Length: 217
Image 1 (cartoon, rainbow, N blue to C red):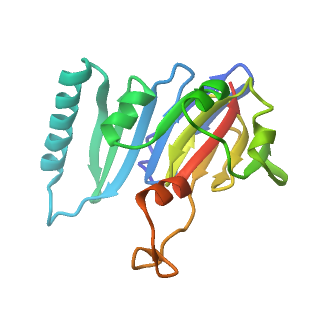
Image 2: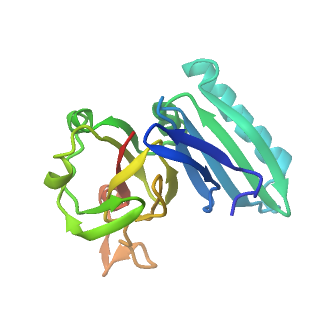
């Protein structure tokens, strides 16, 4: 669990302000303007790095990224060590900066633009109301009827806080509250990196871990 002092107050017109404390080692919060705040908690392996070395490496990477993409695109908001665990809070000016800096998949925007970007919504979904899953799974065609909603696409595993009410998630996610989803992905590999003896490609792994979160702002 992340340090207990990391608490975020968020709200929107359709929801009561919600107090959120990340529960997973990797979590992000998205605001309505597209800014991303990342929360990371990891046990420090002293045999590899000291906290100072890790912090210096992170700051160097941030500085190099900002030099190329623009000052303030990525900011280390806080970095602390407690009982051998490193807690980091990093802010990003946009989802694109978060994706590029971490080399991960990330999309935030309208349902229409998501389709134009190549997202097909061709997986099964859970219907969500008031933070609770209702009924049986539905198809992407049912989800696409709600074109006024926004969609966030991320790679699992990741805890995700969105600026609104979640209405659908792909089946490979768990709903924790009105605005919080745990992207878990799908188990695709055995211990040897294969599924039933068949080698899994990077594309198949990415497909299995791609999580759609649809929500009303």
